[in-house]
Image (cartoon, rainbow, N blue to C red; front, top):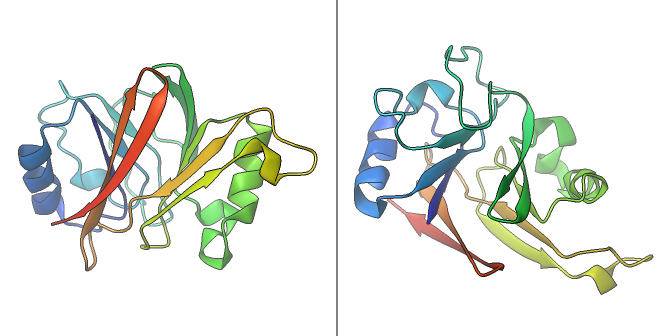
Length: 167
């Protein structure tokens, strides 16, 4: 399973606690706290993007390369678009980010920035014209601010399962 984090804002202690509790196979980090990630143990694949508060970007290569504003990669056979979301105005609604994910033909959109946990499943027939595929939209919330939330992702046999948790 995969641990999804965002907006840790200095709470590396909570990142380490969650990693110890959940024992993930990988981490997806949606920005704002790049310096909080556990660089001393990069045996755990970390996919990360830069947030609007990430003024310092560590000189490391993540599983998806350097930390950019957004990243597209595959987990199993699912195309993931990982972003912080500030460039797409997600605090005013996530429609622009969803439109961008659709244009990129993503199966999964993961973003942070709002500090609000959310999960949404969009079926192809909910759009006109219909989409070619479904889109999962997920925000783990904020690890740095109460309720100190995080997310999980499991992909098995083409099936996607998200979850939310709190520290």
